[in-house]
Length: 310
Image (cartoon, rainbow, N blue to C red; front, top):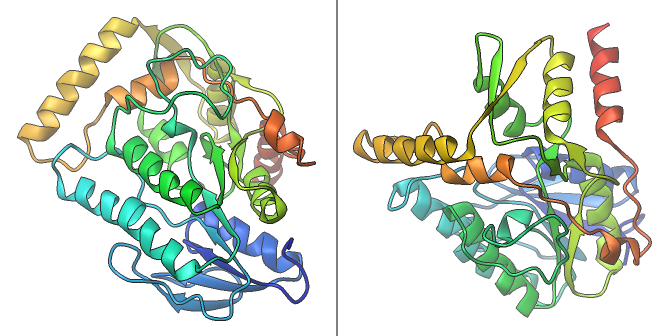
């Protein structure tokens, strides 16, 4: 059933960026929203759930949209990596047991795709493996459980939009003296507006089980997109291209330094370099075949930012 009047929808991680947008979209569609997580969401009622430790209360719920996840780029062997496994894998198993046959839409990530293979055109059967960090490994392990349980698994890439707590802060932190260093030459990248992800989550409650890529209608030029986003936030930058070999060496050094100094995350990682240095274009054919159409783009987001600043 597509969430609407009379449907009770549980949204895990609804206090976060993506989960919050999905909870608001479900409420706007007339559904009764139950926000499941450590903190209340922006709509509906709240049921406490510590995804790293507990089994969620899904009593009376008709459909589940699972957004709760530990994110970041933790060092191997760190407490943060252990917590990520506890949330993204063990928590996944507990959530699926609690769902007990209810329809589940599982928000995964395009980070599950093998970075050692060409990703210029990535369909859902692209190999998964060779992950460069715990995030990719744990998201892949969690979605394996979800797929085995008959869930619909969505794989967005680089979700952006109002309230973003990950992409924009990391981008702003990399600007130094008006310069942004990027690994390798310009590439084409799929990005996902948070509104497109929310639309897909609600629509996917009626889709056949399996994996579906979710992104904006067309990929973007990396350099142009980043320059436009920064300009929209009042920051004019010069983009300089760092040779890929140099960027990889710098990432290895940063990872080694973080391990010595016991930092939670390195200042630069091989995963971060990979995500920016290689073309990653998601094939949306499978989701489109279900009638889903991405309605938002980066242009829409930047126009809204400009209106807010004026």
